[in-house]
Length: 293
Image (cartoon, rainbow, N blue to C red; front, side):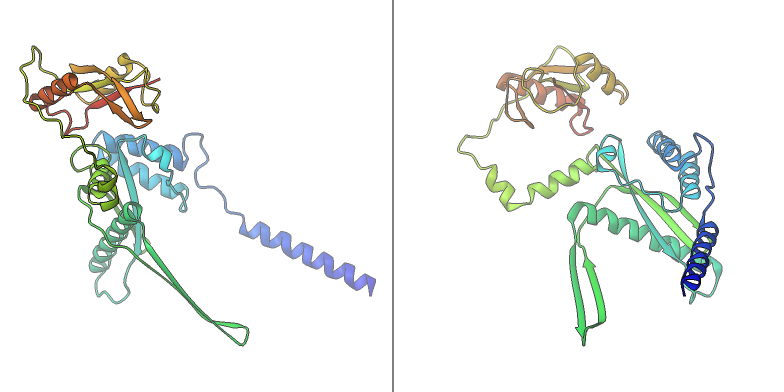
């Protein structure tokens, strides 16, 4: 009996080794810089520069190196100029021609990416239903639903291979159609948010004044206010804005801070900001930097 147990153990151990050997997947990309993260970062840089062809090649290479590669990193995402959302779909066997199959799969991938974007902004409702009878699960159904309206997204990549379509859409972080604008509009339509902003103070109103210079950007010096961190010197702020075409930003000293995220300026400086923006329109393009500790 003992010998049989030993023989059985050896057979099981040998089988496990064979299975593990058969299931080992050799990496497709082995060079130091030939990895999905590197290709994704290069693709994002190309995307920001408007080079869609290079971006597409890098995203395809990232997925080739690792089909399960995920780029979901909220902290990293908000340090870039745009957020990418990914969608995928498979071809419908009922479609009559390969061209129809490809086009419809690509469209489905785009819609899936759009849904991911709305889920990110709005959240989603999740409903589950499980039936257990006589100690056995009869069915388990999970449904999710989301509803929302998003503008300013752009399809930056579509691909179709091996009956599978993938798509990426971009939502810029800045500007009138960017992520920040979408969040602001969502917050502004929230009744609780409006209630929290109510005040007895009369709204500040002033006419634009004539300035000696034309400004095309804005820097708020808040080094003495103890807020969060954006950049820690005016020179760095100017350099950051220069990459977005700003040549002569208006520099304003913050007069106070109500919270770690809400700065204050004097009435006189508010008039200067308003007047400069009337001519330079830098607020709409989000050409604003904060200098903090």
